[in-house]
Image 1: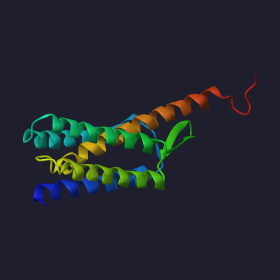
Image 2 (image 1 turned 135 degrees about the horizontal axis):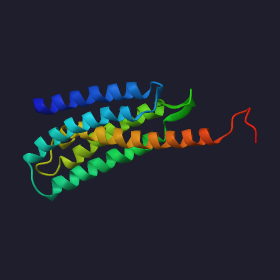
Image 3 (image 1 turned 180 degrees about the vertical axis):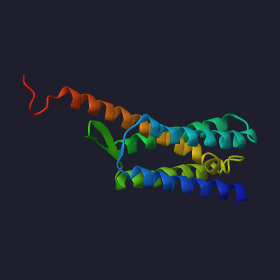
Image 4 (image 1 turned 120 degrees about the vertical axis):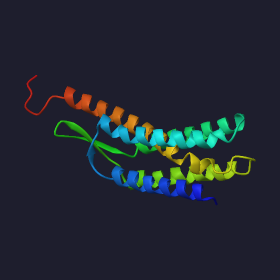
Length: 167
């Protein structure tokens, strides 16, 4: 295993640990939380472009597309495991042990997908080169769905009369 692949995997695992830690904390839902996904996405895109430069053909494009679809799917599934509630008039969210487990499963699926593709000539290392982009896409999809659910919850709370409302 090359030192570049090891470096990319170590960074990916560190980012994963940070994401899981943050997901398990109760926090207000806000658009600002999407910044982390955008930063990871930018770094991941740079790493992915550097990897793709040394490869050509439709196989690499299809492999990358498959990986990103997998990332989005896991983000959508994880979003359903996040608890959302209203506190002080603001929506809050917190992931559960299932959310954390699904993060680990998502990365394992990404690396398993890479291992399957590694049998094709020239695609070895795709998973490690794209791990940050994969995490970013998965995180952004999750955030978008959680944000949508939070907005719906906020709208429902605003439309329901309080205990002392007349009507």
